[in-house]
Amino acid sequence: MRTIHVIGDSHSGAFTLINNGTEYPLPPFKQHYIPGATAYNLISSNSESNSNYLLNEALKDVQPNDIVLLWFGEIDCRHHIFQRLGTGEKIEQLIKNTVNNYSIKLEELKNRNIKFAVISVPPCNREQSIPEDRIKRYIHETFNKMLEEECKNKGYNYIDVYDVARDENGFIDPKWSRNYECRWFASIPDRQSY
Image 1 (cartoon, rainbow, N blue to C red):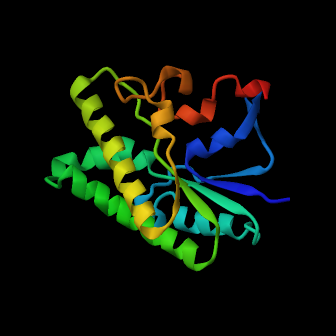
Image 2: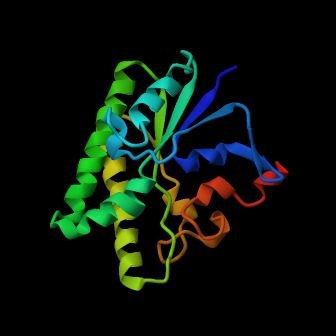
């Protein structure tokens, strides 16, 4: 049986079944959770999350007919890019650098003949700070546009979940969020009943 490996940050938990607060595998999906992983550092051998190593370890589990879904970038958008705004670097350049690093890792997977798709970053949470909320929404939207364009140009499969999960203002729709956090898909409504 073909396995679909979901590798990424906490959003990779979307493909598990929750029962009494415990997450269980939901075949044919297999979660490979890499805590704190960023798209920017997937190529780094020195990141705090050790994401490059952990991603490569997860890929050892992939068989020739398997599919890999990669879900990275939310931590970059929600935290790292936003935190670097005071450095004088332009938002678009920070996002481009992140997408470029992510793309280097994607090229490695392509060269290893791994079948994969990239999942977009979900919308950000509205945190009641209007200027910051607008900036974070802009970062998420711009990241997804740049990532989608990069995937299109390189021939990578891209899955857009942003539009499905956003409200009319471009923020996470509360029905897709647990405690209004940015973990939107990790708590699909009523998935406990599947």
